[in-house]
Amino acid sequence: MSGAAKRKRLQQRRKKPILNDAVQYNQPENAAANKRGKFLFKLLIRTTVVLALIGCTASIISLQSSIAERKAELATLRSQTEAYEAENEDLERILNSGDIDAYMEKLAREDYGYAYADEYRFYDTSRN
Image (cartoon, rainbow, N blue to C red; front, side, top):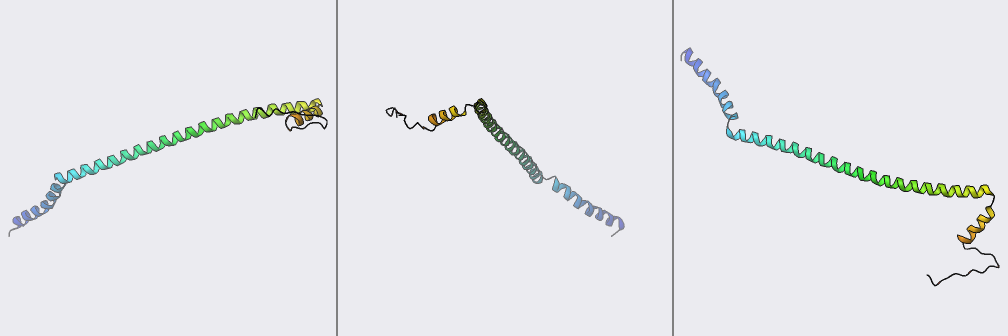
């Protein structure tokens, strides 16, 4: 074999794998698989983003309802505070006036049901 024939044969051998690789990458089967892989990746990314958005939305809604509950609780506590402050002012007024005996008598009669020894109390039981 001559040198030119050997060179030609070597060039053909060298080009053959390169052409085979190029042909393999351009085959329709691999292109379809590549497209399917890209589609699945995009689908996975989109699904992940949508699920993250749904999770964030659910978290925000949960926090908003919690905030609303706390605001209602705060309003209740404020009204209770106002009632206690009004009651405290009444008690301070009674203490400062020096009329504690009359207050204690009123409290004993109305709230605790006490009566004097010579006093008769009648209760209407027909309403119960």
